[in-house]
Length: 286
Image (cartoon, rainbow, N blue to C red; front, side, top):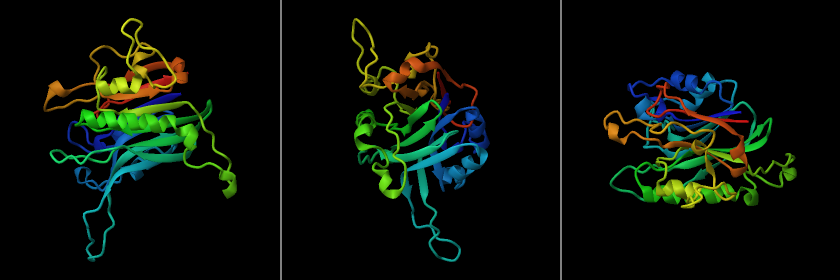
């Protein structure tokens, strides 16, 4: 099973061009795709509907979209009536196999004044993979505040590990004539976490390594795929700042539930993709 995560930067590459076909080409061959910064009616990509565009470019995939930020500044049409063109910003999951349920988990945020602060979220998709049901999350956390990232990652972990108790999107489905949905423990968190390896928020996600014995795989912490299957070369990056090269760093990750750690065959960063200011991160599971 091949999975890939890609922050699309609303389809605009480092060359300043909007080209959704570049995004689609970059994720071709994946079984499950997690995308971030997917927009509708955003002025920076000429008001494109990326959800519709990606669905047409990738017709062999089931897909779900989770809106994190949803606003309307009162645009009206030529007839003076409400245009109902909402600016939407969020995450997307695409899968070769049915996505039988999804939830959009809004992450905590603060009322930041000095810099823009968009609502962030993690889109949960329950996927019926041939190897068994799997939960996949497309995640995007804050890029400015470490304090906020810490809050968001703690909250995300609480929700992810509470899945068995909450039961996802629906339980007792027989009342409505639906089959009861599976409740798998196994999950994959993929996305733009805006943190660097070894940072405080990274350690909240994965746990603090023992000073003598090092990091351990435990049931209550996700496992960083970069620590598995040989990882990626030192100095690897997944995001580039063309104006401030010193800010370029590794901030996109795939984390797997502990039982999946032994199934991680490979992990790599696609350094050739040019559809965004991020690079796709690929993981293959046995």
